Amino acid sequence: MFKDNFYLRKGLLVGVFEVPLAELGSGANNIVDFPMVPFKNVTGNGSTISATYKHSGRGLDALTDSFWFNTKEVEGLLEKSAIRFPQIAEHRDKVMAVIKDWYNGYHFGRFRGKYNPWSVCAFIGCLCSQLESSVHGETRSVPDAIKPAARAYWVATGTTDLIEQQFTNHRDQAIRIMESLIREYRETRLGGLDHDLALSNSQTVSLKLPKPNMNIINSGKYSAEGMLTLCLFAGYLTHKHPDSVCIPNHEVYNVWCTLFTRTLLGTGFTERADVNAHGSLLGELWEGKTAILSSFIQEAFGTLTNHGKYKEKEYANIVATVLTAASCLGALSPPDQASSHTSHAVTTRENHTGDGQCDHLMRLYSTDNKPNQFGVLIKFKLIPKNKRANTGLHKTLAKKALDQIIEKRYPACLSGCTERLDIGIAIGSNVVHILTQLYKLDAATRKWIPVECLTSSAS
Image (cartoon, rainbow, N blue to C red; front, side, top):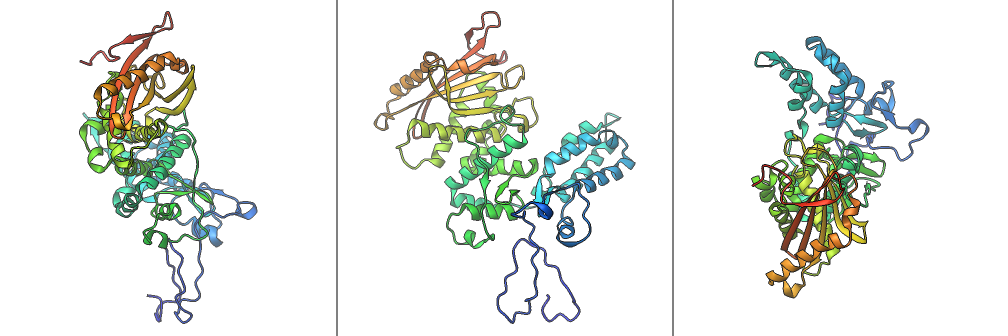
């Protein structure tokens, strides 16, 4: 296209890789690369620029800021839309907050907070269509129109087949990477530990590559840098710092949740109506039942385990990963809430409380729709490898785990909770036996009272 083209004086190649010089006489010797990744040194002229910045029209900044939308450009689109729909101007801050949550977060060069142009335009178009339509003869309000408009657009234009292939080839490593990415996004973007699922030992996912090299992917060997580079160049990650990456926004976060659950549990399992229903697991826990939890655990063991030498702590870590997947599916969200985005669930491993260590602690929505007021305590007992056919022993061990929660005073850590579920799990490979006991806190005596069910509608 460029070589020996007498009608072309200059050309611009836009892509994600550097252009290599195959040979001296290739005719493509005078090439200048404009990298769109963060600078290593961000001081002085290399300081980070927010997306509200108007570029000077010169140099690398002008070129970099020509890609994707900045805040001023998005606000300009809303101002033009408000000419036809004045109510948009009245709710501009709310609309901008939704756009930022769903489609912002990309980092190019020195620019932070760039918006996905395809998704922003599609969202505004859908918002206007919703406002133009009427419900029962009445004009739809902006808050009501936002709900159906805030959804994935750009990610629906392509597939993640290549990424999923890499995750399938290196499942164990991919699960660890995805769990860390999802955890970091939840802790930093969805409100922190008091607002959503967060596992202990949070770490930023590092990406240290002098120059991105896709040959790592083609080699068939596992490489965290290669896997993250693939996701970065595909648009499913962005630079958080020069040497680290993160999930940019809620549109892409939903894709990661889907990838994680598919990789961990398999596509067939995640499409099952009983486990994929919104709020399915939380609703079951309110009733003291554990069929769905047991299904999650057994399915994950079939994926993650390849030997029978796990200790209680290792099984507990697997179950923590399972709970992450359940939250990603929305199974731990209140059944009457429309989005798993607001599923308040805190999981803590090896929580020091009372006279010992509780293997897991969760704070979920209570039956009266109050966050962090339904406490779930989980204790494991390991089934010896040579006793996994002894069903009587399974029940005995589960009961022992359940009793230990009381004996070691684990509920002492549930300050502020008004409802509680104790879960004793006898576990070994894919053998799982679970016993539960529900409690309600008596407001007068401040004592936990055993109950059969927390929901009045349960049979």
